[in-house]
Image (cartoon, rainbow, N blue to C red):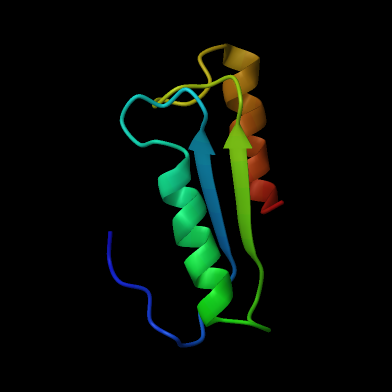
Length: 75
């Protein structure tokens, strides 16, 4: 992971999964916390934890499409 500097960033969406065997959920959580602490008043840094998926994301066809729609919506 790269270092986070105190500067202006665009809005960021960070996603992780509770059952990810490669990246534990607390790593992206710490990253988001650091981004928010260093950039108060900046555009939103959103954080989403998928409680059902693993490292590759959702496995069902419709679950996968919901994830893609969420990404495109920027919610």
